[in-house]
Length: 112
Length: 111
Image (cartoon, rainbow over all chains, first blue to last red; front, side, top):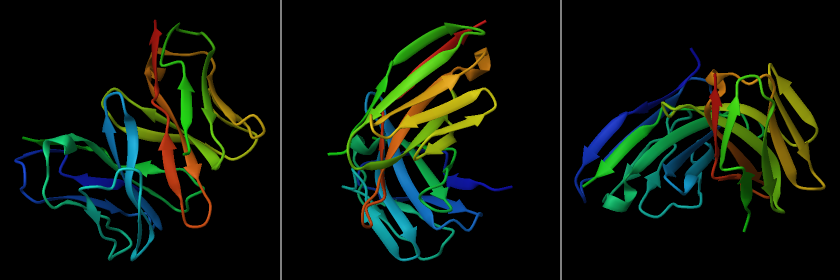
């Protein structure tokens, strides 16, 4: 089944403890992206990647890192999480930027 | 700054009604996505439009490039259409392929 898999689905962590949210797609898509969703603010793009080793900042990249060493994986790294990074995170992929996106199921992150 | 504005924020309808959700966007946006987010949180991509009109089942999406406006229509609405509908503009130009999202429209269809 074609899908984008995010892990974990839920995560509670403490301020400053490094964490990684994984994202993997099995559709050989070139384009992958990370978003966060907050009440009243909607979805906002964090980082995106056009292909392997090609990444760029979205609208809210501060406090996040990404890497794209393989086509299928696009992990989101929080080196030192803070409470303002408490949010619902989505990963998505697309065959090319012009076509529809496939979204992961989301990761609900709470930083205390 | 590229912007996407959606209206209405909330919409309540009776089963069977025709529904329209609107999206206006700024210069620099080359294509429009319509997304559906179910109460459980999952997001599904419905349409991507850069011109004209697309139809899938009871859903129709249109875009007017000159007016920088897109609409999502749902015909013969059903309670299972209850969800948040989000439009997102694709900013293109050089390597700047970013999405800017509207705040979403919460649709409730009552039986």
